[in-house]
Image (cartoon, rainbow, N blue to C red; front, side, top):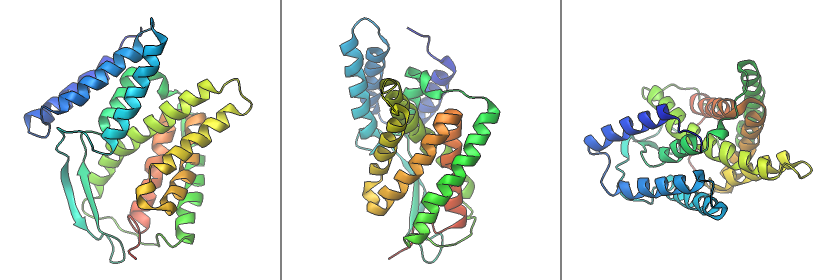
Length: 263
């Protein structure tokens, strides 16, 4: 069994310890933490293969529940009240979520293979090319579908939005969809013709379906963006996928209607 990356574990403990001391976590959150620890032990042990599969299954269930804020004990404070960032946009609000980041920390601690390290040069090249593709497909598609329009802006809360989007959104989503799902499927499909392509497309499809609550247009647009993120991950590693995702979100936030046009 490989040693845990103790720096990640220390940061996790410090951050959530502070959240508990300030009343942002309830004791019921220990249920989620305990189940994640149990899943981690099952996944990392080598003696019982079936237990590893059960551990991954438990993690997937917990990841969905944490991402959808179904589990108790987390006080996800609102830091941006509902407001229109432009006159023609639907109201936007933002919370600092404490439950969803546990998914990303679990993956970094338990499945360090998701990082898929690449050279800095390759990461930068992959990010630049993938971001160009994502902007053309996702933002171009959103413009054609009438979901957004040109609306340059930089609100007072923009830097808070950037930090939240980097640490609590894109890092977690890319660790899950690209590192864990796409990376795991690529390993499983390595003996199949075009196995890497199939893994990328399946991960992109799942990423699109995760946006089903916003309607079919966002499923389509997120799926297209997911293809770009998947290419960034394949050629530039997890860092490239995170940078591409954050870059596209930043372009959307700063230059176009955010989150979308009001009907």
